[in-house]
Image (cartoon, rainbow, N blue to C red):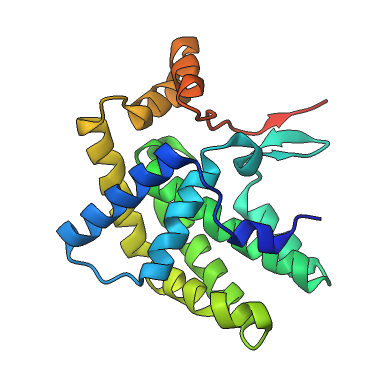
Length: 208
């Protein structure tokens, strides 16, 4: 069982965390949007955490990769364990925000587009906020998840601009390199990502 509290704490990967923090703050100011600082801090930590494959991918008996959001939602609806349901709701929101924020362009050729991720992610955070309200953990995090739900589209727009800005201005263009690897499977792009401390995002690999 994954320790839910551990996922709420800061995981420091210094260079990437500073990059995400400064980039998000710059875009928030430029777009003149109102985002609660605690929610912005959560997003910075989320992006930093998901730069590590051990946090982003799932290693199940059937596959290794990202599990479809619909399957996670079905599991959340069917489980009787409150902690597992809350973990799955958070996981849906986190994955949806990451994908919609950084890989929206790549979704155009997929079975589901960015609107699906926005719908699933916003609803997951909304449900999670309701689930934990009134609990000890909820006193700290229920307002954060509510803000993430209410501002999901705004946050996606912010992350889209962060991604675009990184492609144009970054000396080490991690996001563009990530995009090249995602589309082509380039070994060189994969090596550059790993040298920068980033594990490439993979689709689920079925195991037979």
